[in-house]
Image 1: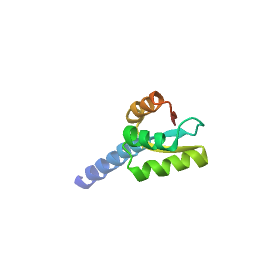
Image 2 (image 1 turned 90 degrees about the vertical axis):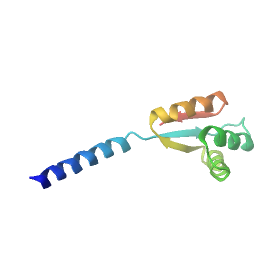
Image 3 (image 1 turned 30 degrees about the vertical axis):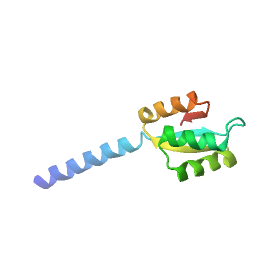
Length: 95
């Protein structure tokens, strides 16, 4: 009987873990013709806590691909960052 309880507990844990991971969203920043590379890089470092290299890579993708996922997390985690990006005149959405 003990092994049945162990299996049940493991299955419940796996279901909870799966539910948590499916709630992840993407914070996407879109290209514009207004902001400079340096400004976008600086903003990603401050708002999204990117390293210099991460911010530069994301900025290049934003410029050449038109958009880039700059952060992945729960809606609640990303909402504040999205609002801050909007306040800094960057176009961003949570998808």
